Amino acid sequence: KPSVEYLDLKKKEETLAKERRYEEAHQLQRDSIKLQKEEEKKWEGERNKLIDNQIKTQENRNRIEYEAWKTKYEEGKRDIEKKRAFDIEKLMKAYNNKIRDLKREQAKEIKKLTQKKGGSLAAQYNRSQIKRSQMSKAMDSQISY
Image 1 (cartoon, rainbow, N blue to C red):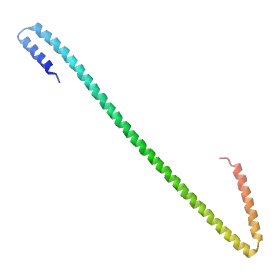
Image 2 (cartoon, rainbow, N blue to C red):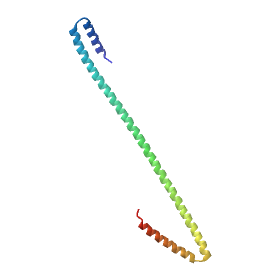
Image 3 (cartoon, rainbow, N blue to C red):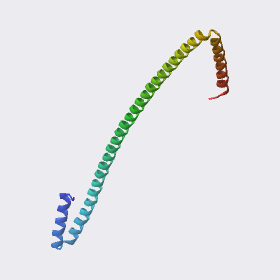
């Protein structure tokens, strides 16, 4: 939008041209062109500042949004890790309970059998357990993780 000063110069230029004062009108025309270029340069500078500010504002918003998503992601990840640790602990407890129960049942059965047949069956069982244990250790030493 042209300034008031520019519009006044244009009016004076037209008036002088109608009065056939061409040299003065030509001088005012040069002045008005110069003023118009200065105003355009000023307007462009203001426009560029505005654009730069808008870009900085948008970058700031993007950074804040990124940080919020990053925080949300990390919190979700921590929650998943906690749940996984809890589930593993729960499974380990169930596993250990099952092993303990099986050992108790096995001990009861061994006790019943030894009471029925005497001590020879218990000795055989102990020897087989020792062999299994030795074989298991040997296999574990051969397997590399």
